[in-house]
Length: 210
Image (cartoon, rainbow, N blue to C red; front, side, top):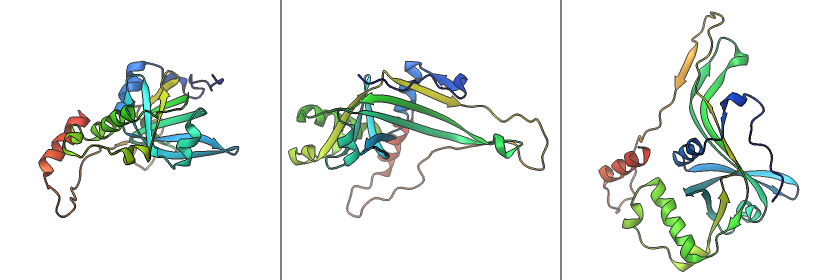
């Protein structure tokens, strides 16, 4: 096992938490993170889809994806970030964001058993749209072989959360406060000829968000 970097947090350590429930809550409320690996001594970072099952995170990508290959049996980092709003302070120096994030250090393990991989990919789809796999064709052997799934433990993880408004230590001629973000469905764009059941999709998305 490599000597992983600390997850204690050096800057604003008061925002850092190793609470397992909080870490899982942040992980489960998102579905895209950034995978960091080393290629020929150079760091590369790639956006990567994932699903959590128990105490493991499963990353999903093409079998030909170089970052996924480099993640197998090698140290990696994985970061998930959700921004809730902008913090507009009294000085430019103190502007910030309110956010939730998780950083994980691990060694990736390839999932090669096709039955296990199929189960993980079904859960991956259903994590985005609950029960959607019930309405889709089963994964074929060719599709499973062309898909890479890498498992990482989340025991070396920490969360970092900022939720505070700015302090009003001066009164500049500008708005001071927070600008909060809200994620919502804004449009449905079905492919012509598909079953256009917008109500079902919307209800499933709302089920996921709850």
